[in-house]
Length: 463
Image (cartoon, rainbow, N blue to C red; front, side, top):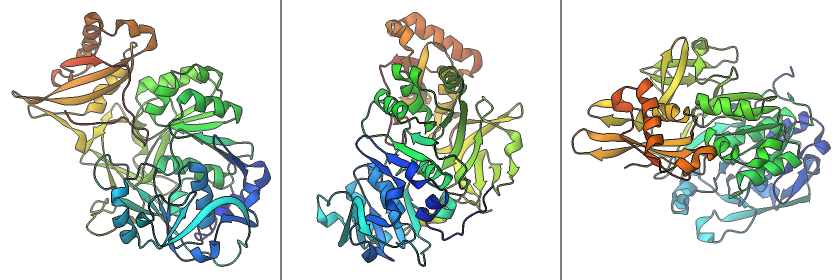
């Protein structure tokens, strides 16, 4: 195993240290760029003017974002990595809190009033530059993926972001890809695995149908690919997936229930199928590749990689080299508990030597004083052979405060039974066989699809 690189070794140097730059590439739906093109040339206009600046990195697509990260790490004091769905209403406050003095983009901003005073545009690598010399320990600022209100800014370093990645671990023919956007934590992890680990990267495109993306992945010889369980449920509906043969398939971002794990083993019989736990604040906690949902109780404690996992008051807590350093801004609170562990707010339950995810601490439905975690009910619904995907939520009740209802997307083979009362009864009977009565949905509504948010997770709303 190669020794770890120095803490302040910039991303470009880590990518170069993995070797074979001219054989490795970044690819989206419009352009392919060889990593070797950046050896002595910069894609940034006025690159040196950005030295020591706090930079807002805001681009239309993922390829220029990735080029911007290669250019800015070690050069800028701070990179604020703006996700594509960032609400522009919050930009003025973000610029102030991040002390942003420069904007790096692929197109000039539509509204200059919503940008720092200096602007540098990403283009083709053309300007000669030297990548030697002293490098800064750049702060990487990422945004939480909350669905309401102003997102929090989480402070990382390249060291914490790459803590779970082994340098130069992959041969140069390894091609990574992900349904995630690399401006989110899950997608950034895959990009860093490609750059630091020694492979190439294929990006998804905003609004691209899953089938079209899979076809591009096949054409680019993608060997390693990741996404949320919701991403994969959509992808397995596409006929293109039957021609796809990656060697490694990974899930993260949502709890992977047994139904989707079994489905991916069925679709990709020769692939290593794994599900991982990670959050923007906690970093990568662990990966499970034994074919079962949840994780072994043996994971609790301190690992050889310096990751400590505990369960405190029913929620998963993690302390590791991958933990973020904190939130940026004022009056934003902390995400660590009294012992310095990140409280993930993910509720887990021990069953027969294995911990299972049952939901989020802040996502409980209160049914007459009894708690119901939607994800726990969804796992049961999804295990029914007629169910492709489900979403459980609350409906107000004057008697018990709330009741549980479910929206269900049927498997394509039984879609014609979408209005069938008999099928609804059959699914509810399956729930009653394994769930307490207060957790069984009071009603099921069959729907053609369920909304998935920008982070690849099911959109959960109130009643």
